[in-house]
Length: 425
Image (cartoon, rainbow, N blue to C red; front, side):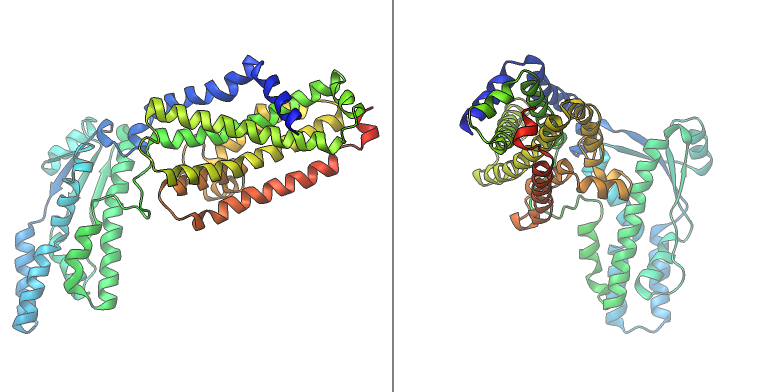
């Protein structure tokens, strides 16, 4: 096995074209995509700028006073009346909305200007702004009436957009939709549990910020594309190993190996180990260079790297399974056309559905589901979950899919690989 490993490493090391594909090409793409999309994936919104107008037809203070007067007319006890009045001032929807838009993370991206209705419409038509957010009359009163008393139909924020800024307008609408969704969700919970007095602390913590379900920091673009390109380009190792196997068969090197008394399945197993070891070396180089030059994983703990190493070993084994299958097919058909089809088309398809180019959350649900079952997609999921600080136990699902794929590939490879006599023919 060691001899097979040395041979395969030396063969690939002498092929400059393969080295460029396996090492330099992914690193170049990491740099290009990392710099191009660092604002989108890295949470740096400073490079995204949009101007929006806010038309305010509501008077917040008048709405709160009107709501307070109604509480008095409904005959609430003085203690309850006072408490609800304080809560109303704290959770006024207009107050929460403006606080969210003034958050530092959004201020660099969204520039809000208060305009009259006609002026805002003109600016929108001229393409100077991408959206108009209208606060309707009685917005504060109607919203508080629904939120605290569960009476009435509440109120609605109105967004008018322009086709000139469709992308930014869509982003702004998503932000406002998120605000409304969180507000409605918290209101429903509080009304159900009867915990209206605790609403202000709950809402203020959840609106206008960035929520994560993990202990780690949000993943930036260089981290994402380092992993994305790594799990994509390791697949090329399988195609490369199988192509070299076909060359060995054509040059009768394979036959000489068999004549030396080596079992044919030892040769096949050697391809598995060679592909796995070369994949590990490739991953170490990519992660190291990305850390040194782009700072992708700078300052990470030993525990973090041990987890990354464990995932990489599992991924490398799966790539070894891919190489074994492609080698079996190449020897069986006495052609490396399948290897070229795999590297020329299937790898790109796997990378697309697996999320190497952009997150699968932006894709249709069916595509994302398919991607999670590809070896590279499952590997990407495992890496990202570990990078977000999740426990190793949460990686059982993606890693089990990778291991299952590896076992399946080995079984199929052994079944396809020709017997000793036919293999040497």
